[in-house]
Length: 122
Picture 1 (tube, helix red, strand yellow):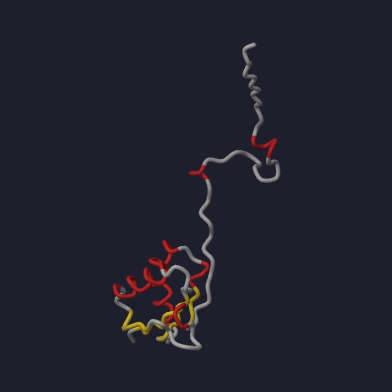
Picture 2: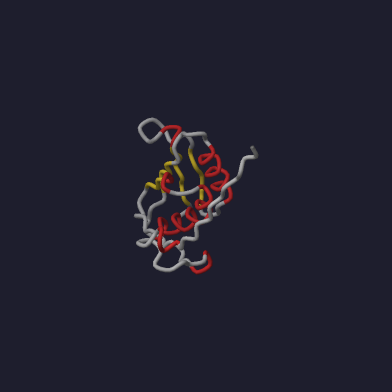
């Protein structure tokens, strides 16, 4: 006896499935960008909440704001992990004109291998 392949097609709108989420379907192009979140300008920057692709834009802006506030030593926390974020950070620091020098690892009590001290030009 030959087997039969029974398929059922169901037409459902997204609004029926996600009524609270989707008031009306939107295209990707129509979606607003996520609003930027403010971070405090201090002598410490924790990169754990940022994607590696964001640090190229973040660091110059952050260091510029530090300089305006008279902060010239910044501890950048990148974590130990695989080392990819720290390596990317160090490659970027070598290129930034506002960076005088940097120290990695940051030292005992300052994050050791999971942090880097950045010294900004005055």
